[in-house]
Length: 469
Image (cartoon, rainbow, N blue to C red):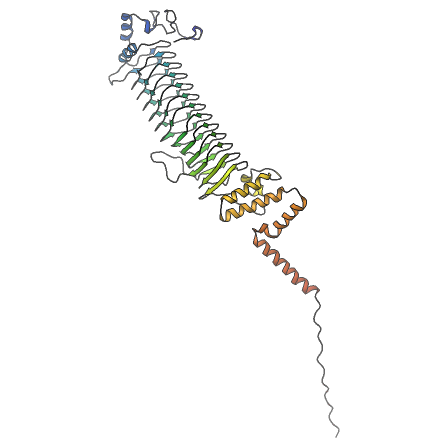
């Protein structure tokens, strides 16, 4: 493997052009040892011995012989401290069922063909930072007991991580997947990081469980991104994600953030117990957010809670369909697209005595002393997307916002008169109250200032005096 001499931190093989680590005391690397010296090197190995092949271009027969020498009574190769940084490993390299008892490093290692770590056990830290896999590679059912890093690794074929178990953090930041990326039924006890990862082929994350946070920030999916069904006990971060053929998320997660995500297709979020932040997202197709009615089979879930939409501010989609989500704390200013609300969609309590930006501070996003002109349109669109009492309250809020934002004096005065007298036709009780007040005033005035009816005394009848006798 080509490498600058100044960057090597191991004694080099004395063969010209070879960057492999010398196998002391011969001065040459394992690949350039004479047959008798290679046999002595191999005979010195025992199950659990350290193996240092840094920078060595390892022939397939030599690698097989070394792993055979490390094989224990259980039939597994047992390696102590394994150092294969910048090594070049042959096609068909197999560490299947190997047990890495110490730390293992494959930083910058080149796998020239298919490779297998099927069922491998990594008891120490393991690093594949910048490793290159030219063909398919499988880590199916592998176990990572301490921190595992695949940062900036390049997978030229399919990368299979199905049913893997990660007891500590897993880092795959900026990894590149040219083929399929499969993490079905993988279990992460702590954090999973795929920040800035590039996935060109199909990706599958079905039945995956993450014990803390799953980070897909700025990840790029050349094809559609399908995440789930999965469960995340912390936060599912999709901020800045790019997906070219749609984004479909089926998850049970306390917090899901997709701020600034760009999806060139349809967006679907079928979630449980989630609080969603979709600020600044952009979808070329319909955005569909709904609560999953039933628990996901075979997955542990976070504590049950209603699905809450925290923000749709500046979200753009031709159509936004919301079903059975709580909007009582949702920011909606700047949302663009046809709104459709079905099922149980809760709104903030709207109190007529308060200004619209105070009565529904979250819906209005507290725009300041005078509402944004777009606020009235937002309320009107929400009213059209709902029905019943909620729709009436939102239409009332729309008229309130127009009155508060009216600039013309006469226009504003007219709207104020409508609000004061009948609540724009939506508060009939107010109109009845005014009529009752006017009627009472009219009766009171009539009683106080009216002319009383004139009365005439009854004529007196003269009693005739007795006749004189």
